[in-house]
Length: 148
Image 1 (tube, rainbow, N blue to C red):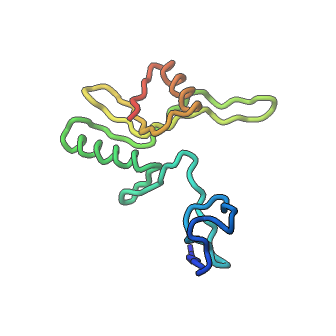
Image 2: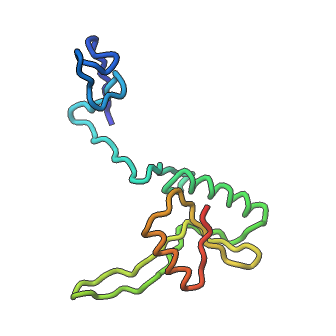
Image 3: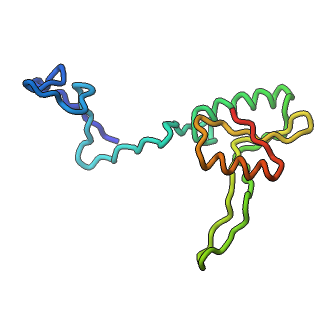
């Protein structure tokens, strides 16, 4: 993305033009795109930052940090069989009013074995209504989610 910072000499320092306050005033420097540049990246709905760890992609910094902790636990022998992005089918695909609907799925961030028991873990920053419903449906199947 090609950016250019504009800072005109006559730009108001205090966010005022005469006696009127400039709406949305934040900073005297304004970042704009040059003609032909890429569009500005869209901000995430919940403020998460997608990131990578080697070849692996993560939806948030929290998820990546938790994965690093789980890798250390795996190396120490505290846990075993660590998997990422495991899909659980909550309800099968159906046809409603002649339209096919896909199966209702929940994708767990991590699944691993600890003391012979399977642990389903999700790195959550915000618990949404959709997540609450999926957590409830998974609990009805006898699987509880550990939220980190």
